Image (cartoon, rainbow, N blue to C red; front, side):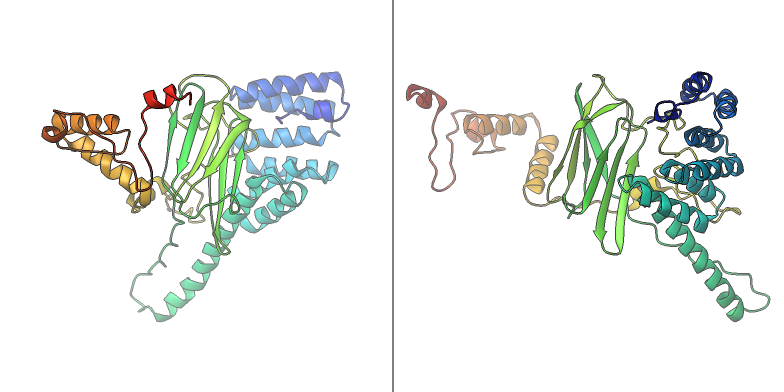
Amino acid sequence: TREGDCVQAMPIPPEAAELANEANSVFVDEDYDTALELYSEAVAAAPACADLYVARAQVHLKKDDFTSAISDANKAIDLEPSNSKAYFRKGVACFSMEEYTTAKTAFEKGRELDEKNAQFKTWIRKCNAEIDEEMASEVAAPAAAAFAPVAAAAVEPPAPKPVQRFRHDFIQNPTHVTVTFYMKGATKENCEITFEDCALTLDWTISSSDAWQVTFDPLFDEIVAAESTASYYSTKVELKMKKKNHGKWDSLESKNEKALDELTDAEIKLRRDYYPSSKAQGGEAKNWDKIVNELPEDKPEGEEALNSFFQQIYGRGDPEIRRAMNKSFVESGGTVLSTNWGEVGSKPVEGTPPAGLEMKKWSDMSKKGI
């Protein structure tokens, strides 16, 4: 649902409903100043509608006015204590102000009200990471000072080891996009896949003490979530998404960082590969994409490794090798693969079936009415 849905959730004056709808339109167009004015007028016309405060809090977040966002979220909670979005807005605003404990409390309350929303789990994990980092810094600083020489410069504690990222790629046709994550050991039981109209989230519980999540929000274009599927293999997970609008995607994720679905709040200095850090004084954001490129790739195994080997031979071979491979594979029914053109170029290549099986030609099978 989008901002202003309280127009349908509870009766409010027509004037407020119209203002909320206008605010929705300009918000999507990223005209946040006008959206703020319209939502404020709607709030004045319907001061008892909690969702209007939630909507205005979202605009405050876009404008980096975190104090006002918290104020509107608290007002919405007072009016409607079961409004999970209000707790989400409050959590994001507090996190952006580096009030990680308060943010975690808000996210935990929101998750109690909306357990199906995977974003609460993600944000709680981020809060825990920041809280742990702050605690580690507080403990390390006095210890370092106690043992360091008086004239020696303070030594910063080592940065926490980043969570490992997993390689992915995607292919597409006019109707579907297939995203492949190379994750050995991922199964339907330990992975949670969430397809939304403009977003994709994968949450993998690796062990009782380790988990990993990736979110693409917004996607390049809308998908049909109900007709998107997930397939699990020994070394990878494939997510096949049906495009709502047929055509080519230039990328998997939209390049417009501000064009976000209203539930994500990823504009608040948070993107998929750059996470906020409590080291705001002179620190730099962690570039996870750079870290990914430095990690060793998983080596293919089994059939995948064999196919990769044949592809390398074909790709590096000269024209004769390629002709030999194509001719032997086609004429043998896929049972022989030769790179020697002198051996296979002058005569048909007979098939060599696996032990216990018999080769049959299509022409013979059609004569028998098969």
